[in-house]
Amino acid sequence: MLQPLPQPQIKKLKKKNNPASQSTFESAVFAGYNSGLNTYTKKMPGYAPAAAVLLALSGGADSTAMTAAMSAAMTAAMSMSAARTAVQDRGSGLKLYALHVNHGIRPPGNCAADEALSRDLCAQLQIPFFVVNIPPGAVKKHAEKYGTGIEASARHFRYLALGEEATRLGASAVLTAHTADDRLETILMAFLRGGGPSGLGALSSFAADATFATGAVPIIRPLLSLSREDVLSYLKEKKLSFCTDETNSDTHFFRNRVRRHLVPLLDEQFTGWRAALLRLGETQAMTSAFLKMEAEKRLVWENGASGKAPCFKTPSGRFFLEPGIIREEALFQVFNRLINELPEIKTAGKKPRRDAVRRFACGLETAVDLGQARAENKKGWVSVKKAGRGAACHGFSVLIKKAGVYKLNELTVIADGEGCGAGEPVFYAALPLAVFSESKGKILAEDSEGCAAVVLDGKLDWKRSQDPVMGKICFKIQLDGGSFTDGSE
Image (tube, rainbow, N blue to C red; front, side):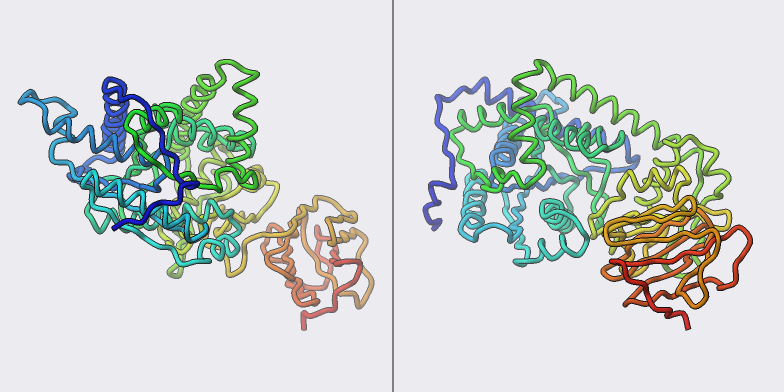
């Protein structure tokens, strides 16, 4: 028997039942499911939907409303008359399953209340219910290892669990309860981060482009046409309880700051901004789709790896003939292609930063970190491959284009066109030279020919002849004012 739920955790909303309003909400949710399925089917010729879907059920307002609405719409579809409709065809015989993921990052009592409420709802609706418990500390450890936030790491584990469960059940889709409000917040976050068309167009369709590592299972968002206010009204009318995640009020999280501070300000000062921003999102989604198609046509990447790990490359001359935005889009595409072949990169959850992609695409750097991958422009080829161990760029970076003294925090790089004193730990390289930290205590310098020098454990390991070469200059690296010893021998 279920124990009473902690009252501060639960919101129960009561209002006189309104069947017409309920029916409208439920129809909209089911129409969203059908639209998402149709969208994905068009994108993936040959895809045959199974008679089962998996619901992502957290116990919060949005997922509770989605679960109840999908169940009610299916019941209505099965009780319809013999007249065949699109809704009936999709609804009749459709099997719902629900998965609840405990991320192990909230107080145990709150997690237990979420699970209990979700389990109770599924028991009432006769929906098979499953739970996945992430080991305590796993999300935090993942975030620290890959340099992502707690939210992003939690999302990684949640979608991994959803993909595995959907594959096990043979489900044709995973349904998540993103609303129009989530869509607006995502666009604002992408804007504030300087995102490109794909970021600004995120959540702009009913079906996600991405699929799970375990198989081609689409993510469908049936609530995207509905607002959070619509959700809360439906829950009142249905007299459904839901849990409130206390972390939703924690403004340390970027989304919560946008939701609690920026959105109310826009509502107060700018009438009509919501519809305008959603139109922007749709426009950017179309722009992103066009750029993706053009990049695929214009630039062909071949797998030039000699070993097991893929290394995708395309001729530098052809690459730099294309407009800058096509070059950037091509790099994002080949990164996605790489992670699809390397599950260990996909699990990292860290995406390339557009500013890093842009520096490389503009020719300002000959090598750049792309999260767990690396892009290089060497010997007539632009290539993208898995980064070496510990190669994720952290801490600082500086691009040297001419002789001089360059300082960034504790780092000092001296580029001397006149040469360096005898016996000093120096190296020779061409301009431009990129100097950046790879991991704690390690500094890497690279020019158009590749690695020029490595600083590690207080020693400078030069990779080039100490004899001056035409067109190259002498470099010295200092950290906190102290010179390194020569570790090249």
